[in-house]
Length: 482
Ligand code: BG6
Image 1 (tube, rainbow, N blue to C red):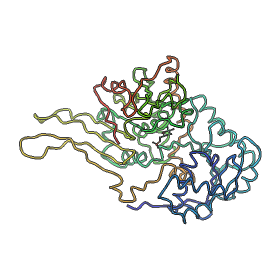
Image 2: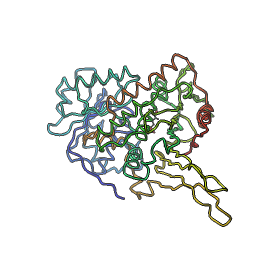
Image 3: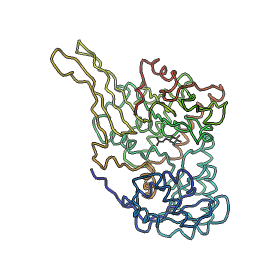
Image 4: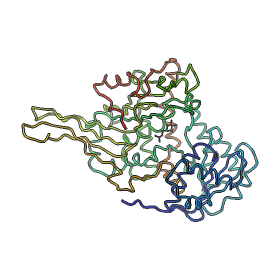
């Protein structure tokens, strides 16, 4: 299946913090790939800014090496040279007053203007204010802001208020890169473009749902940031919440940004507060390399969690009675993100020899994107009716042919959506605030109780207590495997 490339309208994209890690690892390589895919109009301009004093030539050289580092063999040097011709550079300190005129001079009238704030959230307000004050932005400009969007409800509200001083909600693109992942969007296609699942998608037929985002890496060089966040702020409040919303939401009346986001918001608002006994926090111990979380965080007294598992209830007509179990952690057994929908067992077995087991729909987000539906069949051969559970397997790479393996990275898709003006895969301000309103009491309870996370071994599935969270309900986690 050949994917269709639809070029976007002519644009100027300004990246603040262009020498930073995100720009070098994701944004610039992603733009290069979209350029090669044929999505750029001929005049498209990318303007990088940072405090570093350098000219266009030096910036282009640095961008080229970032792209080569990120994409390795995937870089075509001739195409890279063509791409680099679209890049310009302006040195400016976002808290200073110089450089803005030079930036303004590069912005072309009559094309789409997008401003990517790839900087610490503490600088968002400074950039917004100076862009407006210098007449660089207008009512048509778009801004892209990265996570973390606040660290609690109060700070997220304050940030929303600051941005609202200069930009309307329809101009603000809050990135959650999980929403840009191919299979995450597939959740909506699977649910709302098929008749097969939706009639069963409720508490009457679904026993429970598991959402797992497991990583093998530790917090490594990000120890300082991470130690102030922990798994709940870093992964649950945003990425996992979005996955939960896409699984639990009602069908929107149309695939339209606000219709989709309205439905997601209703799910977040329907979440019950989580009781302390329904949460397990973990922190990884030292592995063979001798480095545990406390070393990585450079804080021997840290109580920050690198793993969290929780049982979540969505209190509405569709889901009351069906728990959602979420777990995420660093330095676990394998890197895998998946959603498992376990259906109820058939109400009555007509077979004497074996009882049917519950069907499971496994949606694999990464790696090896695909879907597996575990169904019961008769074991082949004579000798009675023996049952076996087998997977109906679909790997997207196989189903979609060679092009299916070359899926755009989440950032590529999301940046092109900004240029197209499509906010469906971006979080709205009220959604982010609602997610914090649910997360804040969890964090407050931990802080008040001064609770230490449970230790777990690197390479394991997390602390034993996380297994018990499901055993208590006569259920078990699906094994963490790639
Ligand atoms: C980021 C988190 O948002 O997502 C990281 O800050 C995490 O801690 C990363 O490793 C996971 O993203 P992905 O795309 O690798 O699953």
